[in-house]
Image 1 (cartoon, rainbow, N blue to C red):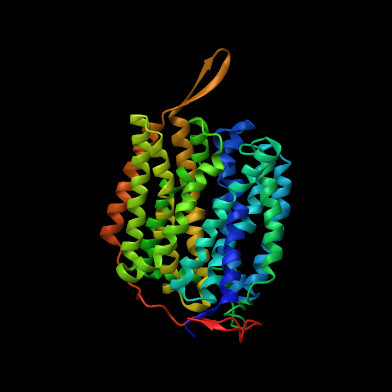
Image 2 (cartoon, rainbow, N blue to C red):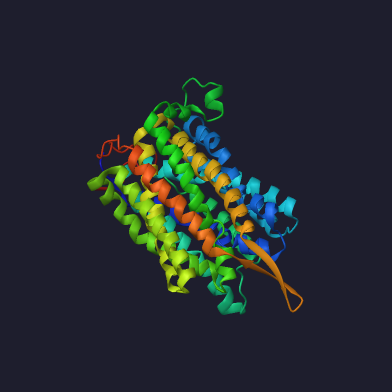
Length: 427
């Protein structure tokens, strides 16, 4: 079957919208919030790394979805647990307790990225995936509505406060309820003999026997170093530069992503995976040259250029990479394979990136006392120069060593065997 019903496409799109909105609403201003409540240094980097640590659960959750329970049911339970934990985190300012609560919340949330990818790709052709995933970007942009509504109705700014965590908890609850309407996505490996390897979701590690997949994984992991300085610490940079609506400002990147994401299938079809991902690396270089130039020449508008290319970076490099993983992995371990790449990028890569960049920012930050008030002074130009060099090295390395070894045509779509059977299909 080469198409999918309108009903399935709409539900998958809403799934992506809600899943990313519930995270963006609290994550984007998180670094600024931690600074405002006095959490700095190693504690701040550790709390921000809860997202990366949460990815450790992705392969195990992938195994559960591959072998035991329908993916949409697993997704529903995870979102419910996340709602409770984010609510509790919003009430806590103690650094250690806040870390523990966010860590368990991310054990529930981060596997949902690979899980939603697997649900979408199971119920639609993989080349149509970017057109569904783009609604995650739309959801990310929509997260800025919370801060606008709070300002317009209550005259208060919620960025840098605990309120976004409460908004995230509420959205997680709504998302869990909606997940009950998703197409049934039964475990493809149910009934097959399992081993300890399966129990820990490690079957996908067999992909690492492929040298090209190893190269892809290493470069994707290292790419998280420049990616996380924007993704994790940009709110701190924008606050230092005097931006008031941090979430809305950063959402311009996701606004552009809504359009750039739609170009990914065309790029893959015409140029293949390698050069699609290379475009994402070029955009990464453009980002940090723009940040650096904006500081050197005092052109604030260049900061918006750096933000707007986010859609090219994420869509072409990371979503292109997810399509590559889907094509490389046997169907019975696709959820685990997506979990593995989430672990490599947003787990190991983000951990390395968060601590590296946290140390980098701390090293080039000094404190001065002005009129009896302690103020932080950042040397952002040096920070952006170092990140620019890293981006150049990654771009050159990728173009030289990675090869496109997957076919450009899509496999026949796997159709869920649920109440969706018999719905009218569209090409």
